Length: 387
Image (cartoon, rainbow, N blue to C red):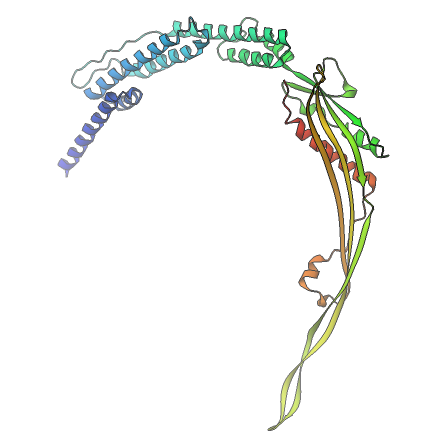
């Protein structure tokens, strides 16, 4: 059994060495480096195959990384400094993973050689140039925003300033310029109402619509105001236009019907004459019961029609118009009965409802229409995209 076990262990070792050699042959240097590293860590007698594999993989990986930096040529293409920085960091990380194994000598006395460097200056230089690129790009975008009035450039500049923060805190005057970008990139939107309703509920509806908690809509780039809070430099107007309101008359109808049933009330034993004589038999006694059911149906409908328009305050251009039609349909129902409950069918029992809602007033329905209109407004505001 011991012979079989040792043979098995030997075969596993041979297959493992072959697999790492295959990775190297196929150019899968990342895999080969990771695999060989895992096999060498903590091993006193290090297999030559793994030592040679990690040596070659390290050489190939580093060569490819340095060649990629040359191709990026960040000195002439400063937008590539960030990519170069990531490659320098990967070189440093690979070296740090390897260093605990050094000096790396196999069980057969094969000593691997590695090109070890201090990349701290390269990383520092790449970080500095990365920050400088983001800074210059952000300043250029801010200038475009000032020159064209396009707030999108200011928002892009803000994002560029944010990219500096992982590398440098308080880099030059980036913090102040970032705040400027916030101010320049923000849109200020005034919400107003144009009331065409001649109905006497119009003022109530208008008041409800203008009670919108607009400050909850604010985010980094959008600030909303009601007309009563008017301030300068409004970029867009959102106008709620109310055009028509309608209430139907109150409608009530009643439906009456009767349900009846024969109910077994008792069983009696009585004598009956048969050919063979008198016999006792069981007789069922039924009673007919009934119930008068009365249903009440109440209906009333209301509608409010209008639209929401988004207007560029500077050019007066209509950016978007959204029709808004909201409805409020009241339905009241009551059902009761007089008579014997045992006569009711299962369906009628489900209908029973002794309370029938009263008709809502026009004022109440107008309030509900205003709330529904306001909900549409808030939903649509979330979908609007500005310059």
